[in-house]
Length: 549
Image (cartoon, rainbow, N blue to C red; front, side, top):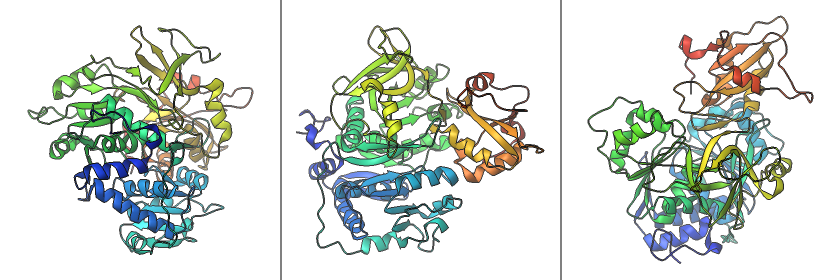
C-alpha cells in the first residue's frame, strides 16, 4: 500500500520500519532530491538508500552487529541521517546525543549507552574534555571533518578513523543487511531526568515511523511540500516528526545548521519552504524580531509550534500570515494529539487524540483514576498497536516500571479535555525544567554545582519570568561550604565548560543554613520554585554575563 499522502492509504503495519520506508520511497521517487544541507550536501531518495547500504557495510567492517549501539555527537549534516538508516539496516541502534553536552552530562550518556562505535564531528571533540573513560569504551571512533582532529583523551583506547577511511573499509564477505520488525529497537534518545540522570528512551522502528506518519497526516503533507528544518537532528521533533514524516510523504527537506532568529525568515524564503516546526521559544524569538515590509513574503502554509502564548500567538499569525498547529507528545509516548488545519488558535490546546493509534486519558495524579472532561489531572497514554511507543528506558528498569503504572504511560504533564474532546496542556507535574526548547535535568546541574569547592549543597528549579515564552529560566539555590563565600560569576565560570549552555543557571541565590528536605532526605523544591525572584536573587543578565557556547 502507498503512503498516507497518496489517495491509496497507509502502508501496512508490518512495514512500519525505517528500512522498509527508505527502500519503498527510493523506488517510488528515485533521483528526486530529498534532503539538502546547509553545507551543500544533497541526497536524493535513491542516493540516501544506496549510500546507507554502503555505510552499513562500513560499520559492519568495524564489527557493528545487531543490537550494538553507535553513538553520534554530530550536528545537522548528512552523516547524522546516514547513520540512522545505516544502523537500522544492520539491526543496530543509533544513539544521537545533544551536541551541547559536555562534562558529567556527556559522560553519563556515553557510559550508559556503551557504544561499540562513536561518530564525532571535529568541532565537538572539546566536549569530551572532562569526560572520564568508562568501563567498556568504544572500539572505534570515526571523526567527521578535519582529518587532523585529535582524539579526546577518554577515547584514546579506541581505533581512530576519519570518515573517508570508514567509507573505504571493505565490506565483510558474509554481510547480510536486515529487515527489521516494527518492535525492533532503532534508536536511543536521551531525555532529561528530574531527580536523577538522563534516561535513554528505547525507540522501536514503529515508534519512529508513527511519529512521522502522525505528522504527515495531521498536516496533510504531500510530495509538493518543502520542509524547513532548523531544529537539531538529535531531537525526535526534527529527526522523526519532520524528516521521517517528509520521507513518508515524499516531501523535500531543507536542513539548516541551527535556528537563527535574525535570519530565519530569509532562510525560509531561500528554501522555498511550505511548512516548518518551531519548539519552545523559537516562534516567540521570531516574533520579537523588528517588523519589516517583507514579513509575509514567503511560501509557508503552516507552522507546528508548542507552547504558544496568548501574548504573541494570534499577533504572530496576523503579522506573518502563517497559521499555527499545535500538538502534544513526548519522546517516550510519541505524538498523541494534534489540532486540525483551519482550527481557531487556542493557546495550550493540543487538539484531538489520534484515536487510531492511542488511548489518551486524564488521571488523578494521586489515585490514577480517570477523570471526566473538564477536570485537570495527569495526561496518560497507551498504544493500540505494538512498537509504537517506547520499549522502556535503557538499563533503567525501575524507571520504566514507574512510568508505566497501572498499564498507562504517565507523562508527568497536567492537562484536561474540553467538551469537544480536545486535549489541553496545562502545566508540568514532574520536576523537570524546560528552557529554550530543551528538557534539563536539575539533578545533573546540581551535581556540577556541588562539585565547586565553595558549594556545600544546591537545589535547582525552573521559574517563570516575563519574556521566556511560557518556558522556564534556571535558578540555583546554593549553600556555601564552611568558611567559603560563593561568587556567582565564578560559579557560572565553573558551570559553562561543564554543562550545555542552555543549562547554565541564569539566577543564583545564596542560602544560609541547610536546604529544606523531606523526611526521606529529598529536597523540598516546591517552596523554592514558588519563591521565584527575591531581593537576594542574583541575575546574570543584570551584570551582562554572557554564557559561552
